[in-house]
Image (cartoon, rainbow, N blue to C red; front, side):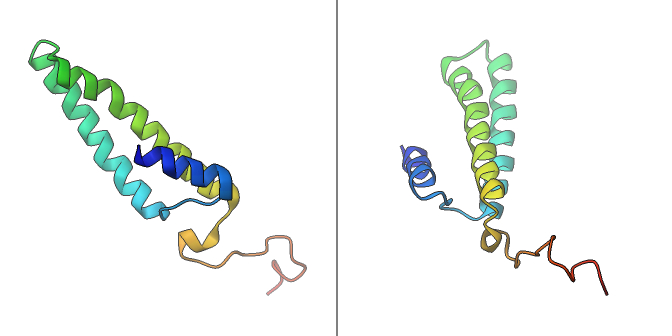
Length: 95
């Protein structure tokens, strides 16, 4: 439910609700949870709860990757914590 609201805001406003570092932390957490659920699923003979989480967690990780892709695609420099550099400005390569 929460990520549907976030996806709606991304689609409507073109910005992300969370900074990139939060998404990166969530990817790590969700990937570890996914691996753990797969191990438990195999160990406990495909118990329904571990199987459900083992299938849904990778989908959640993909949604995190898509959120980071949206931030990078829109070049929202404030989300990265630095100012954008004009790569094609006339004096960029001159020192």
